[in-house]
Amino acid sequence: MPGTIIVGAGHAGVQVADSLRREGYRNAIMLMGDETHPPYQRPPLSKEHLLATGPVGRVSLRGPSFFAESGIELRTVRAVEIDRAHRRVRTSDGVWTPYARLVLATGARNRALEVPGAGLTGVLSLRTADEADAIRGALAAHRRIGIIGAGFIGMEVAAAARERGLDVTVVSPRSGPMARSASPTVVEYFTRRLVASGARLVSGTEVRALRGNGGRVDGVVLADDRVIDVDVVVVGIGVHPNDELAARAGLQVDDGVVVDAGLRTSDPRIWAIGDCATHPNPHAGVRRRIESVQNALDQGRHVARAIAAQTNETVPYRDLPWFWSHQGGDKLTIAGISSPADELLVLGDLAAGSFSVLRFREGRLRCVESVNAVRDHLAARAVLGSDVVLTSAQARLEGFRLADFARAPAKPR
Image (tube, rainbow, N blue to C red; front, side):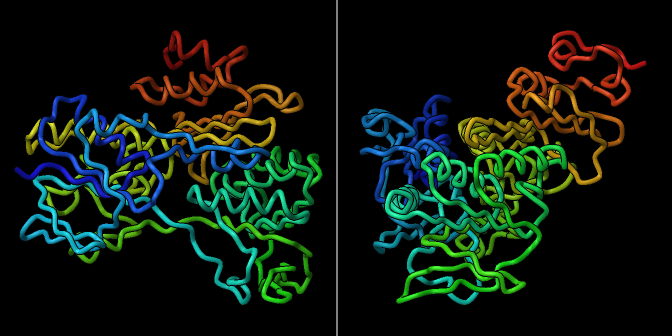
């Protein structure tokens, strides 16, 4: 009897399989992943993995016997075609497998740097364990590293490279680190911390080309013709959702697989979750793709409950998005979804490097960025994940503390 096929063996896909069994689902479960490694944790790849100087293993998502003991078939194979009419999936080995329910957890891939020289040896990116291994080897073998892109990945690689004593230059087309998503206060703080670590930041400019010597990269050429001498380049300029499989099957896609409030695609027997899915997010107020481990796990649990319930009823996915990044000695955590027009309020001590930026929209708290302020982050998740309203006026009262408010919300004045 056909069961559930899950395409993608990352955080989202594994969580679906695990949660299905926890929900009492007794039918067959097949998990398809196109990497040769058993499913592993991705966050350490840009952090602890790059700092290790000796042999290092991947941190598994589940123990070695989990899949066999749970009756989950794990296949190292790539899904290449979905036949919706006959409810079956064809894999790269030519095998067709029938399904009753299908979950697409295909993730995303790195956006390519499209400039002359991008194909030179020594130009690397970070998404998979093999790519992390290549970067770790490059950090051990070379001295000068150029990082193109100052998002979470670029900044984490920069922090690891500086901790290993490398000469680091970060190039960002924006005003500073994480400027696409973070407040000016957070951008300014991490700019100072990056420079204080001994790295160089070149912001507000584009990369025109990569220069090579003997087939290997040795320079980053900027739009104004300045050249940064390098031995290695790491590119971190965002990702593309892996939605081609869905598109070929005739499912609706638009910068990701389009799903409804319950994470179903335009085919009611198929769901899409994680980095590949764009959904009507109630915290953003618009349709969004959310790229975070939290979102992948929570959406996996949500879909597993829907499949196990065997009902056509749509239960909206409403979990609060949150994110984190470790950069050297600093930990940035973000709860909620921000907007460029947010009203900002800073709480804490910027000079001491422990503070939070509260972001309000239409007078109501919508997002909190916390730097080395774990209590604020946990309080923000409690408030934003509930029906409690925190207004800008309340937060500006003398003596206001977010953790206190989370324990005993005050009434608006």
